[in-house]
Image (cartoon, rainbow, N blue to C red):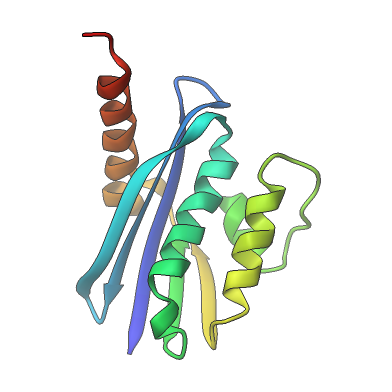
Length: 140
């Protein structure tokens, strides 16, 4: 059994800005879960990326014994979670530590960088969450 998780985070109209996240989770090719929404304002894109990962890992805690592959177009997230890059100071550090703690509970967890074009569904969800947030905040 394999679980594939696609994650994305967004900060618009600038970075830091209005932060949104998305995660889409498949189990053996079938949609298992998806989530997206507002993270905060102002939020950096790195904070939003890590929030997507945290939400996704929490959603599949009951599948922690299965093989999990997290796919993201964030090189920072993939390389830090894989232990290739160090975590320096930054607003995202707290979320990194939260994600790392959650990751410890998984038997087989791998991180893979993918180009943005392969992450279109998660990207579309972050943008939909951003536009939804703007609609809610618009004066009536």
